[in-house]
Length: 179
Image (cartoon, rainbow, N blue to C red; front, side, top):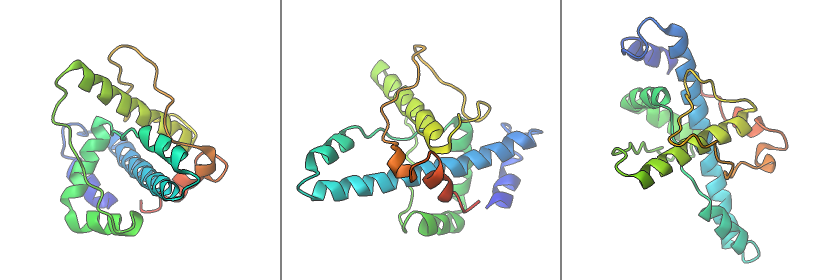
C-alpha cells in the first residue's frame, strides 16, 4: 500500500518536494482508519448493549452521542488515492474491518452556519479521540487545528479507557497493523 500511495501522491501539489509530509500523511491516514475501526467496534458494542434489556438506557445514550469522524485535508487526500486502488482497498477493508467496506462520504460543501458548526464539531471530535486513543496530539502539519469561533475541542466523544484495554492507545495501536 505504501509504495503505491507514495508513488501516486508524490506528484500531487500538496506533497511536491515534501517527502516527510507525505510519509506523515500516510501514517496519519492509517491511524485515521484505525479510529474508524475503533468507532465501528464501539457501535457494535452499543448495538449489543441495546439488545440486552438491562443496558438499553445506556446504549441509547451512547448512540445519541455519536459524532462522525472527520479526516484532515491531507488524510482525506491519501484516502481518496487509496480508495482508487480498489482491490487493495477492498483487501484492507476485508482484513481489518470485518469484511465491511469503509465508505467514504465526502462533504458536499458547508452551506450554512449550522453545517459549519457540525463540521467543526466532527473535526474537533476526531482530534480529541485521536489524542485519547494514541496518547498524544495529532501532528499539526497533517491535522491543523480548525476553528470557526475559536472554541476548544469538544470532550464529548465515546473513547473510554476500558475500550483501550485499560491504557490509552492499546486497542488503537493494536489495530494499526496493515501499514
